[in-house]
Length: 74
Image 1: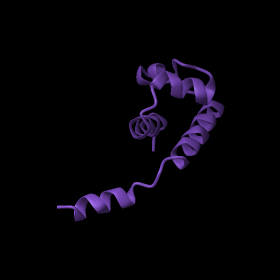
Image 2: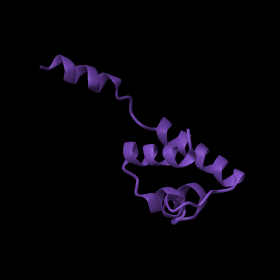
Image 3: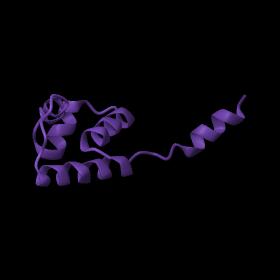
Protein backbone atom coordinates (compact mmCIF):
# COMPACT_ATOMS: atom_id res chain seq x y z
CA UNK A 1 0.00 0.00 0.00
CA UNK A 2 1.41 3.40 -0.90
CA UNK A 3 2.21 5.75 1.95
CA UNK A 4 -0.18 8.45 0.77
CA UNK A 5 -3.02 5.93 0.46
CA UNK A 6 -2.31 4.69 4.00
CA UNK A 7 -2.32 8.28 5.29
CA UNK A 8 -5.59 9.11 3.50
CA UNK A 9 -7.22 5.97 4.91
CA UNK A 10 -6.05 6.84 8.41
CA UNK A 11 -7.35 10.40 8.07
CA UNK A 12 -10.78 9.18 6.92
CA UNK A 13 -11.14 6.63 9.71
CA UNK A 14 -9.93 8.88 12.51
CA UNK A 15 -11.17 12.31 11.39
CA UNK A 16 -7.75 13.77 12.18
CA UNK A 17 -7.00 16.96 10.22
CA UNK A 18 -4.08 16.55 7.78
CA UNK A 19 -1.99 19.24 9.47
CA UNK A 20 -2.38 17.61 12.88
CA UNK A 21 -1.46 14.21 11.44
CA UNK A 22 1.74 15.59 9.93
CA UNK A 23 2.64 17.51 13.06
CA UNK A 24 2.11 14.50 15.34
CA UNK A 25 3.92 12.02 13.10
CA UNK A 26 6.98 13.95 11.88
CA UNK A 27 6.60 17.52 13.21
CA UNK A 28 5.65 18.78 9.76
CA UNK A 29 2.13 20.20 9.46
CA UNK A 30 2.51 20.45 5.65
CA UNK A 31 3.43 16.80 5.15
CA UNK A 32 0.07 15.60 3.82
CA UNK A 33 -0.50 18.72 1.72
CA UNK A 34 2.95 18.39 0.15
CA UNK A 35 2.54 14.65 -0.48
CA UNK A 36 -0.77 15.30 -2.23
CA UNK A 37 1.19 17.60 -4.52
CA UNK A 38 3.89 15.03 -5.28
CA UNK A 39 6.39 15.16 -2.40
CA UNK A 40 8.07 11.82 -1.77
CA UNK A 41 9.38 11.52 1.78
CA UNK A 42 12.62 9.78 2.62
CA UNK A 43 12.93 6.36 4.18
CA UNK A 44 13.17 7.61 7.78
CA UNK A 45 10.15 9.88 7.44
CA UNK A 46 8.17 7.05 5.86
CA UNK A 47 9.06 4.73 8.75
CA UNK A 48 7.97 7.34 11.31
CA UNK A 49 4.70 7.97 9.49
CA UNK A 50 3.89 4.25 9.19
CA UNK A 51 4.62 3.76 12.91
CA UNK A 52 2.31 6.68 13.71
CA UNK A 53 -0.44 5.21 11.52
CA UNK A 54 -0.10 1.85 13.27
CA UNK A 55 -0.32 3.54 16.67
CA UNK A 56 -3.35 5.65 15.78
CA UNK A 57 -5.20 2.79 14.11
CA UNK A 58 -4.57 0.46 17.06
CA UNK A 59 -6.38 2.92 19.32
CA UNK A 60 -9.59 2.84 17.26
CA UNK A 61 -12.49 0.92 18.80
CA UNK A 62 -13.52 -2.30 17.10
CA UNK A 63 -16.21 -1.70 14.49
CA UNK A 64 -17.24 -5.28 13.77
CA UNK A 65 -19.95 -5.36 16.43
CA UNK A 66 -21.48 -2.12 15.21
CA UNK A 67 -21.80 -3.38 11.66
CA UNK A 68 -23.40 -6.64 12.77
CA UNK A 69 -25.92 -4.91 15.02
CA UNK A 70 -26.97 -2.58 12.20
CA UNK A 71 -27.61 -5.51 9.89
CA UNK A 72 -29.70 -7.27 12.51
CA UNK A 73 -31.78 -4.20 13.36
CA UNK A 74 -33.73 -4.20 10.08
